[in-house]
Length: 249
Image 1 (cartoon, rainbow, N blue to C red):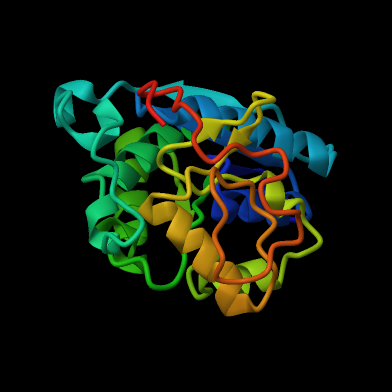
Image 2 (image 1 turned 180 degrees about the horizontal axis):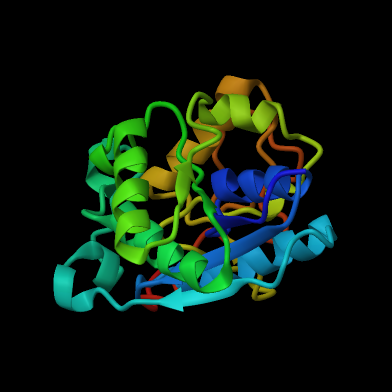
């Protein structure tokens, strides 16, 4: 059994798989960091539903750590306004949020120092191009936070050698359809959370299914025809739904 572990969890596929895996090996403390991005309402609901579906007593209640960042990024930044979200074909670099992992890990480290936890894990995957997702960064921020808090901490990315399609294919026993990979989630006619099918993150998710050769059972706001869907086209989903963020279809 591993020691108690703080798991940075967002409701996304990567962090949900990580949470499930960590909980199979010991006590997992899911930490959700709330910074004021517009899609947090959907992330929190998704994470809660995924944890309920796992039904693993090793997973402790979600702790929400809040640090509003609007003063840093400004209201015009897409992560604050919910507008000009990077589109389906936008390059991955467009979704970079400066300092995102610095904020997540530092808040988690402070929580760990107050709760006698010494291990933090984050769901970064292979191919992540950002400077705050490298092994060197994780080691450095663990050392600096541990020194500043007088509380030894390790920061690990156990999935960092895996690509998303590999993660997906090797965890099919998990309820991955309950996870969220979308920067503009919406609600269907039954008030269920669905993917917008128009953002960079939706493309990332859909391409992972294609590359893994697995039918994509994700609920999208419109049908993506690259691979067969296990559901009937259009069933339960309206292609022109209003966004809860903007009120526009």
